[in-house]
Amino acid sequence: MSENPNNWPLWEIFIQSKRGLDHKHVGSLHAADAQMAIENARDVYTRRQEGQSIWVVPAVAISASQPDDAAMLFDPADDKTYRHPTFYQMPEGAKFI
Amino acid sequence: MKMTQQEALFTYCLRRGDDNLILSHRLSEWCGHGPQLEEDIALTNRALDLIGQARNYLQYAGEVEGKGRSEDDLAYMRKERDFVNVKLVELHNGDYAFTMARNFLYDAWHLPLQQALMKSADAQLAAIAGKAVKEITYQLKTSADWMIRFGDGTEESHRRAQTALDALWTCTGELFATDEVEAILQKAGIVPAMAPIKAAFDTKVDAVLAEATLKRPADGFMMSGGREGKHTEHLGFLLAEMQYLQRAYPGATW
Image 1 (cartoon, chains in turn purple, yellow):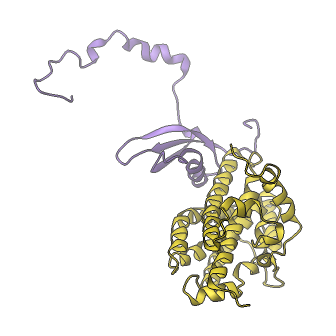
Image 2 (cartoon, chains in turn red, green):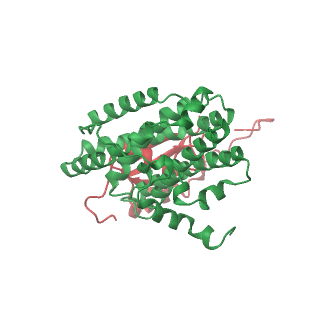
Image 3 (cartoon, helix red, strand yellow):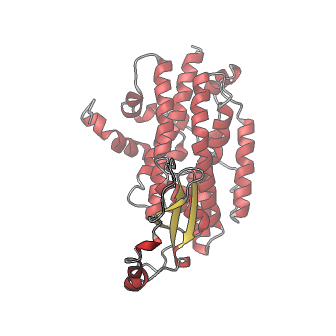
């Protein structure tokens, strides 16, 4: 279907499952505009009570890092364990940090 | 012999059930053939909503009748002449504009009717309507959106939407026709008067068609007969497919 020049643009869909939680990326779909994208997302992604709020974003509006750049971007963090907060003493009695 | 209130209620539930059941089956025919995967899923969802509503009505019809017929008996073991749906819902799907225009006309009638039925003196009818209204509100919103997209879209989509409306319009009269069944039930406060529902239908249709730049067809000849079991030639073929399994293997389960 993606070769069809008349195909509707692609939208990335984000669903919030509960009030207060983040909107999470759940997938993508085709729609002619934002309103139709919300309606389609409702039917494709919230059939089983998955959500209470929907965000739709045109896929072309998302800029992504290149997979080829992954080594340059992320590997340097591998040997910098001092960036993890594991060197602190836990205060006595603290359950959640 | 005069019709009793129980007989009237049975027939009324059958009408509500049959309208939903037959439209649901027509929409299910789009499954796997939608113009886009997303539309395919949306129409199937709508078909499932309608079948849920049909089940509630047919189940209640069986209860009211009191002869031990289940919702399945009523859906699968009645003949063409026993079905009392309007002709609007049994017509072939046509193109996507035709399917959506039919959905729109049906929804614009269905929503105010169900909203009024929420105040029925019959607790079961009120409960069925209360459950359905949210679904129908969404259905009307999406079918109205499609009318506007088609009408105010391209020259081709406008032409197709107008052609569909013109063809379907003669089937809208039946939605508002009343007979002895309604008269008996209206007197008992079980079903609403039709005039306010027609007014709500007119207001909605006029507003959406104006935005869609489509012309409302003139009220001329109107089809009738569906409520008495007199159908178009299309219903028999639909039932043949819908009822095949229960007819070939009565009582089959899986």
